[in-house]
Picture 1: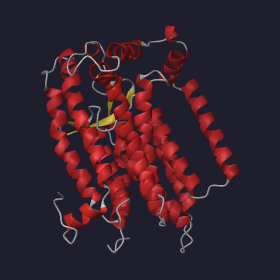
Picture 2: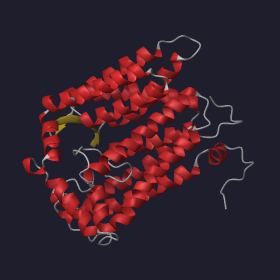
Picture 3: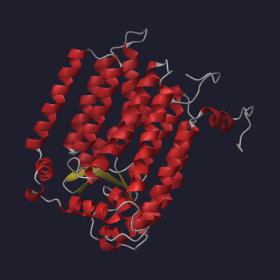
Picture 4: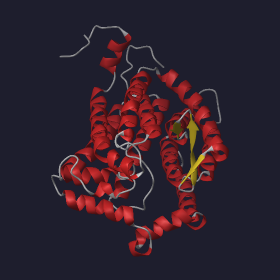
Length: 373
């Protein structure tokens, strides 16, 4: 039985009957699986780095109420408020990302984190969803009545974001942002000649990164020839999937997490494979696919170009991040330090994913009769 009656005109009542409750349910399941995997994988990692066994678990669980509050509060916003909030967020977090170049903590050769009152913040995680909304605004403005050069502004902002991200350096984040921006530009009516040109530039950029950044060279070489590089984590991840089989060893019964350095974050999918089995892993994949499919279905009848482009960008960002994480764990692509949304440990990632899904839910709400723009 529903909590709210259909004639309930309160803010929460209107929200309940206009938001995509199926997407909410799928995200809730992902959050629940993330809680389970935090309990399963984080204690082993915490012990290995000489912390209290449940310190990482407590940190993850402490951030969950904040993430849920961000998700719900953002999903209550109107389209206009989402646009304004994303613009302010983009300016704020891009500025903080620039600050990481001068004041950031260097971890594994990259400066992506700021220490703010004891909380390690990765501001570039928040740049992704905010930039997707701002880029959508500019692309839609190009087709508006005010003759704003939105395409040129969007290109300039994109180049600025890429320069900042590559200065850290963060190739994986750059690729995700680039794919999202390109998909939005394509949907906004990018001529086919430009599609080919930008695709060529993207390929040239990846080739350039291979030759310019040693860590990229190492990871690509290790993917193409595992014997020639450091494939320790990938090998252990594949061992985990083999150990788990169809039904898994049981929650908490895995052993690979004891020797897998990033078992709680980048390779949490491997821990799920060992402890919960291939069937549950396929269920996790299905949940991400379901969120994507529901988002696309809600947009099929959308006539607002900004809403269409912004929601599509958020979906691409969310789905691509999940694909990169799971494909890396399965050795289907070179490894990349990218979390699995809502399941991996990581404060910035958790909060940024909540912001992203909150904006997606707000943009895809049924707005008939709400008077929202």
